[in-house]
Image (tube, rainbow, N blue to C red; front, side, top):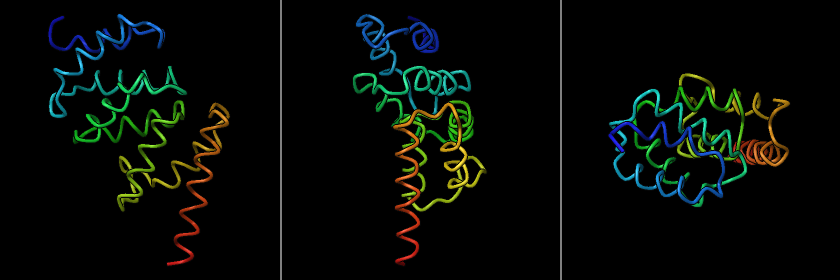
Length: 145
């Protein structure tokens, strides 16, 4: 496939049982660098996480997260994704940002972003529970500091 075709591969992936699609994704990820990610690729990465909110992509989603986190422009797409459809991966990325000592994500207060995600009616119960547990742990840490 030509360079830039990762968006087509991501959009074509309709099941985590699609072994051929996952192989294509794995192959495409090898040619992607953090500095080469385009807006369309950021959006396609997060759209895939949202389509499969309870899956890790057989480890490929973690590779994608590491690419995103090493890039310099992903945060606004993370905020958009979390507002659209909170899922384990986009919330865990915000957790990691907060745990690294930052308070803002893409110009938005990170804790407020999580609170809004927890209140979102589309948030899966397991994700809501993770957010509330994280927020509770953060409050306990601040109270003990």
